[in-house]
Amino acid sequence: MKTEPYREAPYLRRAYVLGHPIAHSLSPALHRAAYAYLGEANLEYDRRDTLPDDLPAIMHGVRHPDGTEEAPYIAGLSVTMPLKTAVIQYCDELSETARVTGAVNTVYPRGERVLGDNTDVIGIVNALRHAGLKPDPERDEPAVIGGGATAISALTALHKLGYRRASVYARSLHKLGSVQEAAERLGVQLSTVALAEFPAEQKARRHNPVISTLPARAADDWAPQLADPAGASDPAGASDPAGASNPAGASETADRPVLLDVAYNPWPSVLASAWEASGGAVVSGLEMLLYQAVEQVLLFTDRTLQPAELLGLVNAMCAAVDLPPRASVS
Image (tube, rainbow, N blue to C red; front, side):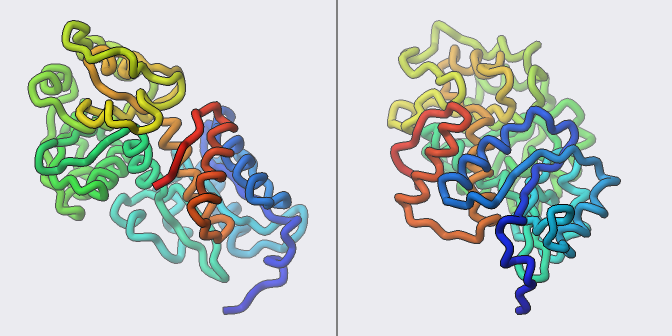
């Protein structure tokens, strides 16, 4: 395949996080730390406030860069809301994960083709594993709270972890068509339940794991109903301000229901605090953001790392957002 001259000018490389609003995104901190660790000193990463109408010009730049300061080679794009479906039409090829979820959060060139992927799924998988989840599909039934695009990624992550049945709790059950379609594609048996019933259902059914895809503070009104201090386990595993209840993934969390709250600001959320009061283990969405960014970095740089180097990369990124270091990577 032809290699264009501009791909040999690393000092002109750029990557961006696209979305709206984007000013508070932590992606630049994660990516810049990663490229510094990898010695990619000439790969810059910036925020770029973007709406769907802005995509044609940006994607033209991905496909036809001039290799100048005004039109640099774009090594990759991190795509956030409201662009995760709108960007699909500009991709030549989608990963299987992107096809199943119907969403793209990662765009990158390979030769003359533009590829789209969804690294949110592996981000969720690795965040749950970091929290100490030991998947037991025969015993446990997981749950997803919320019915938007992230709920589909959550369902896909649960499928990758081996689960073949799940419950989805949402405020508007009649708007779950895309979630139900994804479940059918995955072969996951899906139960849909009104969101208001979650506290009572959780106490009765003890879903594990649970992934909340709700926006920040959206669970504040009903989350305190989950708290059950009398039945809580030893509080020694209280959550780190930005990470999991048990960052090392030790056996203490093995039999505790795990909650991933994708919202991480403010942290701990009311939902996370109530979950811990009921004896569960918690991991914040910052862990998901970390692990999905790791995959993006590897795609943008077209690298395959040995375990020791991958661990160094992850820990450099952890340090950039005040997450505790990892002892190993799976």
